[in-house]
Amino acid sequence: MQVPDEDRRKVGAYLGLGWGFAGAVGLFVGLGWLLDRWLGVSPVFTVIGVFVGGAAGFYYLVRQAFEIQKGDRAGNHENDGGREPPGKAPDRK
Image 1: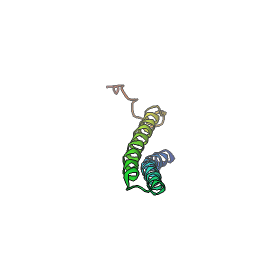
Image 2: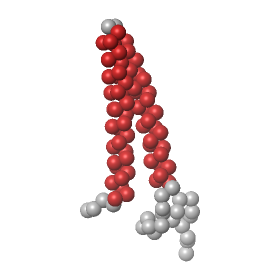
Image 3: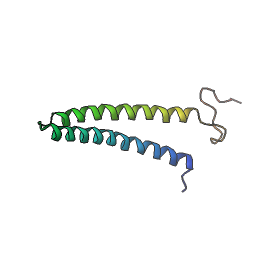
Image 4: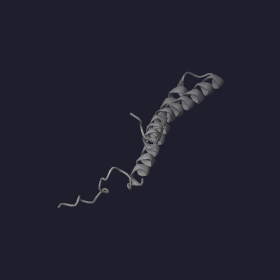
């Protein structure tokens, strides 16, 4: 069974969300760790980096998920197996 290219793009987009979240958390934790070492303090900035990175990653995840969903709704429904467009009742004979 072959998967259409459109479905592959959707899967790739959703997989990218996880990498984006992990990247944001990793970046801010790393910056916090470097700042802790540079200032010679306990892991205060590392903990702050966890929370800031989590918030930034969550913001990225939600923003991108809405963009993907918006693209799905605005897609072309001409060749979707004969289904009626959303919001239109099927014709009864």
